[in-house]
Image 1 (cartoon, rainbow, N blue to C red):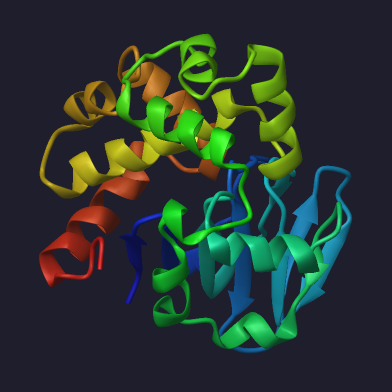
Image 2: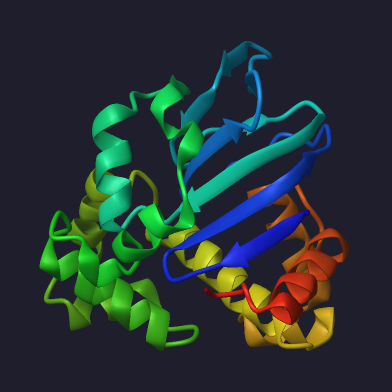
Length: 230
């Protein structure tokens, strides 16, 4: 059964993969084949194959069509991401042992506070951004006792991306929860902090290679079966 689960610091998808457009996540991605191998193409068109593959944050890629795959998205501030970061180089990395990865393995290491690897000042800034709506990043830096330049450097060192990209990912997660709760796409866009429905649509396609219309039925089906945000 096709499903999409949104948890604290992670998301999980199981189902068919269509030949999507090039996109990049503000999260680690683990893609696993149920049988045989999974194939991921990087932005140069090079095919990477394996029982499971780790894709680091902000690496542009796409997946050819497949009958069924399992995909995990792990936010870079989580302790589970720390283990992926240690294993993953600058490119797509085979990880055959992750074919059997389960939600029970990811969930305890999902919450941001589970990771001791982050600089506590960076964590404070991220918490301020998560709670502050459209709080400017300069204000988050001030709240954490950092200059904006030092905060940007810490984000790139620990997260591998600008905080602005991480915040978009968090907004998409918030909007996904709103969709699962029954709100319309337009309402979910506003709940997530996007300017409008078109802005939400563009960011979702850029981050996941999907549209709200594709994600909506999966989230609502998962919520109805009681597995959303398990």
